[in-house]
Amino acid sequence: MTEQGKTRWPLVFAIWAAGLGVAAQYGKISIVFDRLAQLYPDAGASISFTVSLVGLMGIVFGLVAGMFVASFGFRRTIVCSLWVGAAMSALQAMHLPFAIFLATRVIEGLSHLGVVVAAPVLMAQLSSNRDRGLVMTLWSTFFGVAFTLLAWLGLPLVAAQGVLALFWIHAGVMAGLALLLGFALRDVPVPAREARPAFKSLPALHLPVYRSAWKVAPAAGWLFYTCCFVAILTVIPPYIAVESRGFVLGAMPLASIAVSMTVGVQLLRRVSAVTVVQMGFLFCAASVLWLWAMPGYPLACITLAGAMGLVQGASFAAIPQLNESAAARAESSGVLAQSGNLGNTIGTPLMVAALGVSGFGGLMATLLVLFLGGFGVHVFLAAQRRGVGG
Image (cartoon, rainbow, N blue to C red):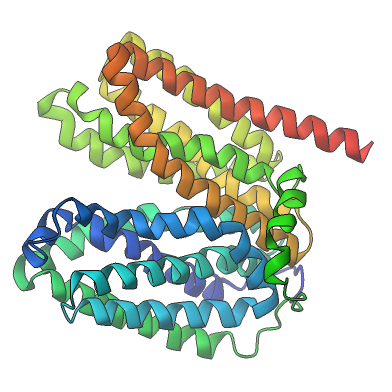
């Protein structure tokens, strides 16, 4: 694989489609969460684990996944992860006992990690220098697009055929993607495999990665971003007027994607990805001040989501910009997956707590601190890189 002059768009889109498949491992549960109690009426509060177990795998094994993907092979990781994901969805569609269902969710978490670590590395290396920002921004949309497709297509399917039908369809899609990529990638040169780290050395291997201002930078900013995005969509709606609430909530994710794919891509061709991320965080902070002054104002909500789109795309684009080797990019992707899952896990409880203690003002103050924190951590790490480089 080379840092080539021409982007291989068919393969880029095929790998992006694999991202949609593994994003649906979250989305297929989220959109039917209220129906799962009908499938497992005795599960009680444990039903929440059907969502959190996938994220827990990312928190615990994110960086480890980056290390093992580089040794196992990027192409092999994607294809095997898709086959594993297909098998788990097929098992879930058989309506097995709840404990086994939870076990399949744990394994799905590992399947998810394999793709989200390997895919952006391959996409970056299948793209030209000019197109790499666009390609990585495209990758950054995989969660939002997958959830939108599930809302448009999955919910009508569930309404007509039931939850298990959605699991069967997802299994078929994952198997189809595994076949497609197993065929399409078979003659594509891939990065050389790295030596597999010994299990006993894994704890010690984490620290050098976390200390690297190059490898950890995308993940450091991503932690602040993910603390906010899902949480905002969860806690802001009550402050939006009922007559415009549906439109605003539908427009916010689309605004984020649209800005990242247009303004963000153009900026990435002119300035560094880290600079775009920093700009995004500052625009987010300004949007929060606007929303604080005008609670629930639709245009302020949509502007905030659009500003977050700059952070979204550029954070992924920063991985190949800051890290030259495939192994370093895999480790950086692994840390980003780890921080993203951590942010998604703690973000909503943090916002709910801020609301409970200080009301809307406390929520806005928390968001402001997080967005300025994301800007600040990139300033700090950029200074470190200049110091080491100097």
